[in-house]
Structures are given as structure tokens and as C-alpha cells.
Length: 498
Ligand SMILES: *Cc1c(COP(=O)(O)O)cnc(C)c1O
Image (cartoon, rainbow, N blue to C red; front, side):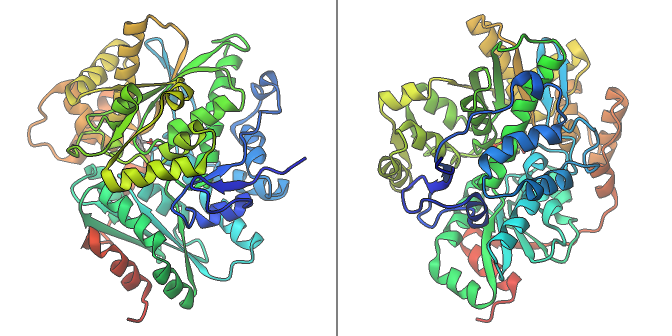
């Protein structure tokens, strides 16, 4: 049988091994790597229901990462999903007020990015060995708040790697910023850019596309890779927890075998919900994929109208990790919806770059029929956080609040009673100020750590280690630059001669 391989969504590359796709991060033509097909789950669901998270991860990931040996993959999985997580289940399901919240924030940086970024460094260093890479790998990452810290936590002091993180100054929460600027590890660097997340992400993509710069890096023994959700090494580990969630519901007797579930995901770059779509394509019984946005509701408009239009005001919200107008991973869904026509996809992406908008055909829209867009305003989000806390004593973070609100609206508008998993993407501690304000109103002049202690008092949930760590940590990173100066900043950090 033909072996699964990877190709660019824009047609420039094909036939890559999984390890090569992970090393490269982004295709040279600017496209994203896609597997040549989506493999079907091979283990029956009844059997998966009896498996641990790590065992489930192996059964899912081996189908995508076909050039990793069993030994290599199990080493990566067992190194990643260990006591860095504060629960043995790794991704527990919590039932609250009729929905199932899939808690993806039990890793070392208390956001769902840990689910993939705790394994990516192992996948990448294994890939480097397999492909006889001699260069030092430089991970360039744009972050809307959570990826940067989770990636640094994974790559700090990993031999043969450096990591440089760009975040929007003023565009992340206090805890998110403190987590990043106090990061330890001699191979880590953090830069605040004068711009928003899209500026940071566009800047990183530009550096990847600059072949002269790539050559200059190679002369100094460096090569670039990405820890952003465009990397298939991020996408594949994210598929695992949807399979695990379904198996958990079955194990707990909450659903019957084969019964469909809906999945609601608070969405920014479209990576997390795309993983749920992959899980469905693998054969997981999933009905609707509910894509929840905040006020930056470009995806809501897209699923409603078929037009993706990024030409609009960028709004800073209390769910900053979803403050995104260019959802990179949507390109993978667009590609699939064209029937894997790389030329058609490349044309649309070119339009997005040139005109800031594109419109898909009716036929493509039909192929995306599983997706339903919704959004929550700031006031609706705060009201939902309070409602859920009052009704069930369960405090969710501001991103999960958006998803929860959109799910409530969807359920009451449609009457759909399908059991629903809501991806819970961050600990409320990461956004203490916003969640406490949502429940109790104005907090006066209290500082972040006073609010954190109060959050602990009212929820009875212990303050996570990730928050305790930054209480008194020293700020180690103070670099700033304009979005246009990012490449120069990379050169400076790496010590390249002019
Ligand atoms: C990154 C992030 C999201 C958005 O996920 P995407 O994969 O970018 O769509 C949502 N919530 C939190 C807390 C995040 O960190």
C-alpha cells in the first residue's frame, strides 16, 4: 500500500515524510503541509475506551507520523505526557450544566497549547536525528499569548534548538506576559512587537519566505522551523484529545457506542477546531463542529456568507488568544474543500494577500457544512461566565466562556440536544482579572495577585504551579521592536555578522 506522505496546500512540494514536514514547519511556497489522506481509526472505540491518554495518543499519531518507529513515537509520547500535567488523565472531562468541558489546561503553562507543545520538541529533535540535520534549529513563533510560553516551556534548554517568540505588546493578559518575560533557558528569547498578533504572524511568515535570509542563516549553521499551529507536529497531537474525549464519554456511560457528539471550540487560528475536523474524518462519530469567535468574528461571517474578509478593525478583547483576523489553519479546510486543488487554493490565498478577502464557491461551502459559526460579544461572554459559575459552581476562562456562550445560543436556536464537548482551552487563573470581574463586577484597584488569591477562595481550586512560579520571578526579557524590524531582530539575537 502507498504510504501516507505530506504535500503543500499550494502545490509546490509533495511526497514529504512526516518528520520532514515537522522540521520544515511551513512549505517554501507559503503553503501548509497536509497529509495525502486522512487515515481511519484502526482500533475499535470500545477498546479505545479502555486506554490511557498515552495509549490513545499512540493509536492516533502513528497513523499520521508514518516514518516514526514505534519506539521513537512512544518515547516522544511518554516524555511529553508525564507529571508535567497535574492530572493523570491529562485531558479530563468535566460535566457542568449539561455540557462536557474538555479541560485542556492541565499542562505546565495552563493553556491548551501544552497539549501539542509538550510533545513537539520531542517530535522535532527526533525528526532532526532521522534526517541527519546538523544545523541548530531556530524556532520562530508568533504568539497571541499562549503559544509563546508553551513553546518556550517545551524547548527551553533543549540541545540543538533556539527559540524566539514575538508577542503583541499590550495585546496579552498580565499573567500571559509575565509568564513569557520571566522564561528561563539560555536558548530562549522574547520580543514584544509594536503591533497586533496578525502583524507578528505575518512578520514570521515573511521571514520564512525570505530565501536570502535563509541562506545567510544556513551559512551560520542555523535553520528555521515553526512551533505555530501551522506545523503538522502541532495539529496531529491535537487530534488525540477529541478521540480521547469520545472514548471517555463512552467509558463513563454518558453516550452509547456510535452516538454522535457535537464539538464546540473557541477559535482563533483555526488549529484546534481543525483537529476536531480531522478526528471526524478519521471516523469519530461527530455531528456539528461549532466554531466560536469573539468580537473578531471573521470566521462567523465566513461560515455564514462564504466570504472571508479580513479588512476590518482588529478588536482587543478579554480573550486575547482569539484576537486574530487571519486564521492560518483555515487554509487547510479551504484546500480540502476545493477537492485538494492546490492551484485553486493558492489563487484564493493570493487574493487574501492582495485584496484582503476571497469568496468560496457554493460547492466548497457545502463541503464545509459540518461547521457552524457563532460569536459572543464581551458582555455576552462575561454574562455566560457568571451564569455558569452561579448555576454549576464552575469557573471557566474567557476563551472557554466564548465557546460556552456560543454553544448556549446554538442549542436554544436549534433545539439540538446532541451531547456536546466544549474545548476548555485555558485555566481561569490565566485571565483572573477578567473572570473575577465577570462574576463580581468592578474589582477596584486590586492587583493581579490579590485577585488570583480571591479566585482561589471562591472556587476552591488550588492556584496552579504556573501562576505561583511567576509571583516573584525576575523579568529576563525586555526586547521590543517594530513589526517591520523582526528579521533584523532575529539576526541580532542569533549574533549574525552584518
Ligand atoms: C490559542 C488559543 C485559542 C485558539 O486556538 P486556535 O487553535 O488558534 O484556534 C483559544 N483559547 C486559548 C486559551 C488559546 O490559547
